Length: 228
Image 1 (cartoon, one colour):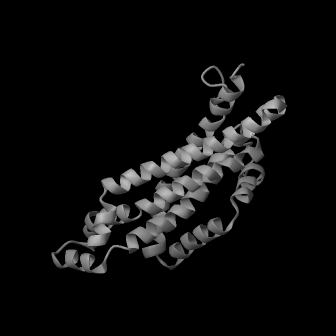
Image 2 (cartoon, rainbow, N blue to C red):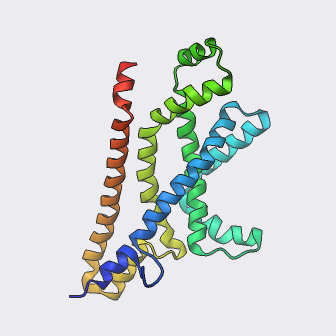
């Protein structure tokens, strides 16, 4: 029995053709998580210490995106954005834009919570030694804040990966879409196709959780929090 359908669900036509299947979900989750974090840091800082206008704009951006269903955000980027900018956007790029915006809004709150959780006594003690505000932030707030936001970031990474399942609605040949295509082409494999879809998301999600757990232990998060 040929397993071409299974290869199609996992990697699409890669390496001889365009990538697809689960490979697309993993690639989008990783890239959108990292790009979202890059945007999340300045958004969090603006919300925490920005001026009245900049702080309001950052807050509005975060809250609007966090309150908008991801599938609606995906439709905006796929159908509305090309009309606004006058350029046709391929489905994969519209999915990347939507997931990056979604990721940046949620991670901005994680970053803000991480930075805000640093004990004020440690900040005041650092300032008492003569360090400037920027030095305190770089040497005290950022290292501890990043460590403290690790559990929430790992949890969001799993959620973001699962949320990539919605991109099939705009025509991206991801695991969901390839599974539906495989089931349609091979009705006798419909059950196994749906089981493979579920297993693909479950296994990768558990791997991400395991990486997050290992990272927490490496950063001694649990021990530090208990000792504090």
